[in-house]
Image (cartoon, rainbow, N blue to C red; front, top):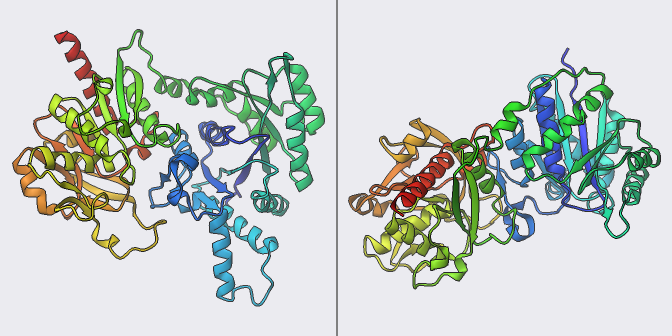
Length: 542
């Protein structure tokens, strides 16, 4: 008989932005190294159905799963740290939960009952937990991260569902509480009182932490650790440090050095085995002495929010470790660029990347960036909107179509080289209606894309409504642009390159979502290598 999975519930206390997602991901990595598969789910308390219609300034990046679900950016951490299968069953928002409950009520599935938070909403939450567990291959752990902070009204139904779920389970469940332990500089003291209050709030709900992970600027002293154990009613070897680190990929190493996985396994009756994390450590940093530096300019409209392009920044870092160079990212605001050309202050970097986005803000500035890269032979990587920028700039300056544009930016453009996908023309709702998830792409060879992948057929994740207009395909290819990646039937442009350029590539999909430290995405690796080559060539000329 198959063993029932073990559930780990990760909550947060005192303040938000503690790094619960990174903590959950790191624990998932450590448990996988112990030989146990993991499934992961993020429970978000907001009432949006998903973050797809939310501003990156409010929510950060929208991460897209392979099956086309727009989710919280923490699922990107889950992907980068673990091998967990991430699907629609790996994310649930309060909006989705209430929508499902109300749909059942309209269908009469509650047989006339008064629909209430308990039991109907909490039952739906528990159903989502079991659906996530069904993704496990063999006996393992289900790691459940609860968004928000203990004490928030929005989180109460999720916490109540967890309390019920733990009481109903015959197999062990563990509660891991991530809490903030502040250091008061003027007093020279570390304060545990906020953690005590946070745990007290949990206990009032009926949830009792098994492990407490303390987010600190440094470390928690033995005296403070003993105080937390006493007043939070946890056993010895139940309080762990989560100090600030320079590199997020050090979090599992920090936890491993404190034997967190041994504490988890011991509490559920499983034995720990020795593991070697040297491969992880080597993959997440440049090991050679005095590595060359590569400076990449990211020209994006959301650069003021550090999490808006989270997966993209991480994918660049993964590739730089693979290539063996030190990465420096310059965040460039396209709104500061006018029609007089790419400003001198932005020039002189080793490569430029234009990420995805929506709307007209910064559009013309990004086009100037693409023009500069094409004319000066500087490596350029366009992602989603960045590919469309490449196409519009090429149409204007090479084909001479001065009013070429995307119909997203100008519905009246006489030359809409980027136009709405045919299946999008009747769409009225914005949320969850784009071309989402993994779609196949066939690569032409020889091409820069094929050289990067080493494959003729790949699958990549999409999140867009607009596409390259094939009416202009012949003119583009006649004048030096090459469509090197298409949908299998050839009807959709997936990758566009400039043939006589060292490395100018635009892709309609989002390769950053697939990159991992131990498996950097090949396109990012090729872009960083091309940027390093450009830097060396410029240095030799100087």
